[in-house]
Length: 174
Image 1 (cartoon, rainbow, N blue to C red):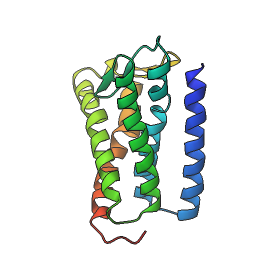
Image 2: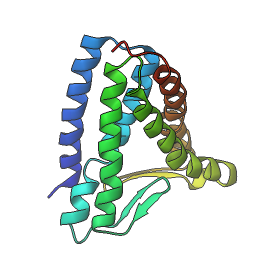
Image 3: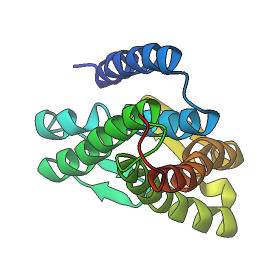
């Protein structure tokens, strides 16, 4: 099976639903940032849960601080990021305030640590050693990946954590 195409198809379905809801609901700019970051994390983890179970040749899973060699551990870790990110993405789009946003705050806060910790360490020690790897299909090396990782996978979760926490403390107005 071509896992890249599988991930692309799953991600396309998520993105299509996300666009439809975003256009209809017109969420705030910060809700869009938090929501899209969660959607991106889900998309990046869309093939690994199934591949961890079905592909005996899978090279292993690494997503920030989360890592697993093969099998059920991959499925559990990547599946948690996929489901958690997907749910948080759509909650952030559809809720302007209220308790449901605690889930978004928790997911964004967790992903800030999971992705931000390794990013900060490598950015401070050797930014040229960073890399973004999409399975065996694509690798983005060095300083380019350091900047891209911060802009797309650290900063949005930091902002999302703050936004969702503030919004969760307000009474619900869906």
